[in-house]
Amino acid sequence: MVRQRVEQIEIRGQSIECVSCGALFYLTAQEEQWFTAKRLSLPARCRNCRKTRRWKHTIDVDSEKVKARDEAFELAMRNAQKVINKYR
Ligand SMILES: [Zn+2]
Image (cartoon, rainbow, N blue to C red; front, top):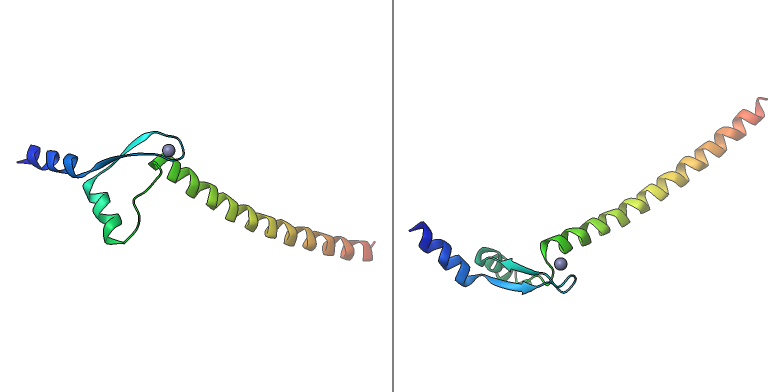
C-alpha cells in the first residue's frame, strides 16, 4: 500500500531544471498541487537558489535598516559631541 502511494507521487511529480544553476530538482505532486491551487506558476529554481534569493532579499532589506540606524546613531553622536563641547 505504502509502496504504491510512493510510486504514484513519483509518477505525478516532475523534474525541473533550475534556470539559475541548471541543477535538476524534483517537484513532488503535493508541491505541484500546492502551486496549482494557489494559481502560481511552478518554480523555475531549485530549493537552494530560491533560498539564496530570499536570503539576498532579506540582506538587502536589513542593510537598508542598518544604514538608517547607523545614520541615526551618527547624528545622535554628533549631537552628543556638541553638548560635550558646550560644557568643556
Ligand atoms: Zn538552482
